[in-house]
Image 1 (cartoon, rainbow, N blue to C red):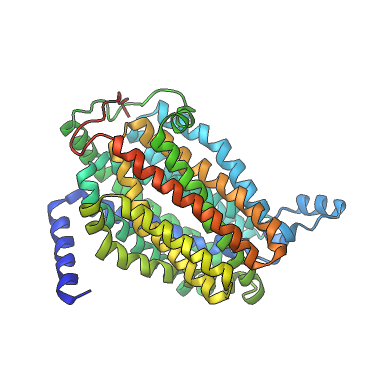
Image 2 (image 1 turned 120 degrees about the vertical axis):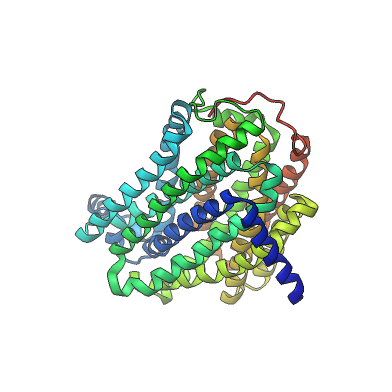
Length: 452
């Protein structure tokens, strides 16, 4: 890429910021959200890779397993992912009821205030050293990440229309990526100075900034709704708290998005489990494991940032969502073919970078632009089902699949991963086909929109 081309993209970023005040607040919002999450993500990953079962599981469960002759430590990730999925299933109707019964000005702040309160609670729990704190925190962090991020992108679809989304979503994603780079950096610098527990308060501070951004962006969401003839934006949505499940089943686009999410999670889960085995062997201890995961996150997000700043906007604006969805899927499929032939640790790391950076920088912004072209129930309810229940259902399925085939060696794990990546690619193609039936840019969705 030439220097003049890079300067041109930087000038376009400055122009976009000057022309769109809500872009500033959206960037700060996503930066703070992902920075706060990535401060504690390495803590979560270190807990999942911990070789000390008493850190992960409560004492009563350890005693029960010992009595049955069952070694919990051999199934740490499988049990944690199972607990995460069950928690997601339980919380999904709660979230659906919150969205259905309360207006946006109420439920958005409530979601983040709840997560801040949880971080303060875990701060106290970590200081007690009680058994099982690691498992509880692992599950909570997974819930926090998915719900907080899906609420963010649903809100962005209220603030920006489809044409604006293609212009700014890459930049907003870059703001989040910068936060995802800063977060692990904060963790690496502070974990051995202030300890693991105090990092949770740092994360809570960033979530407080998210609350401020929500308040600042609300007028722009109302303005966008008025310009597009949408009414009731600050009213409760109504409808069933389980409507999201029905919508995912009924609508081809949402089904394709769910299929892509399910198999996309499978691709990441198989890699994650291989990585966890390496960490458990070479980086024992919470501080060492936390430092390792922070370093990996930093590398992935560095690649993501470059693509978001220099590629995403132009790709979406010129060619639409097809290359942004199909390109990463095909790259992952080829990566798994290479891993099946040569499952070397370095190759695993390379495919990990390709998988996560391609998802964050291209595939996710492309998917999120589609939600600007659907009704609000799809935007908030169905999207939450896909981003939480389907996501963690994929986690649950493939973490146990990995356990079953890992005994056959890494080559067999990655051979199975080829079929998983193929499923993801077919799902991405289904999205490309289904989105052609959505309203053209600038035209309203002919389906009825309920008030939010």
